[in-house]
Image 1 (cartoon, rainbow, N blue to C red):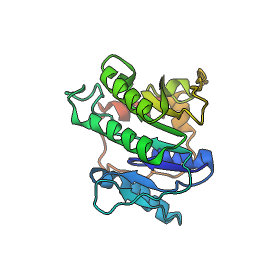
Image 2: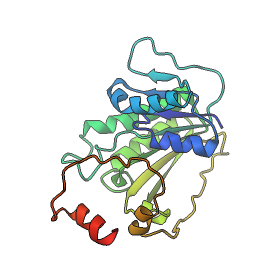
Image 3: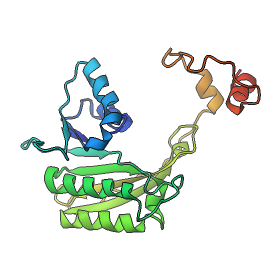
Length: 228
């Protein structure tokens, strides 16, 4: 499975893809404004002995390799434009441009079998209607059907209420002009106490704050009194 990362940011999605497909990405695409986020991912790959080509699309001289077909492209475009935590979420937020620009570039230039990305829950709702219409039209223009999948971490076995929208573009030729139907998930999950108590690695065990927190700090009280 030949896959590519588009604006992978810190790298969680592309690293998960590596695990699923059993190989690292052919290359990574991004824009200059996200270099600070993605240097951590690139450093990680280098430490693991992988030299992953990194192309910055808005810099002169950038040439994305042609040739072998790419099966899947994944993306983590900034979600601030539709996030309920942003005080200017909606159609006028400039952060929305990245979903649009990325989709246009990937579907016109790379033409993978599948292009998918993750964004704020509002993309699936009324607030995100303008963006869904834009993405749908971009897909149709380039020979792709589109689907939206709204879910949350609780339904996938994680003790966290994190609602997210996933959007997918399906190459009409590769999928016989059909859209795959997603499964419904409601996996059993551990409690947050069991999850924290069951950690058996030493990853990130270094104390970040050497000062003793206030007894009124809610996180400190939870760890002390509940997680023990």
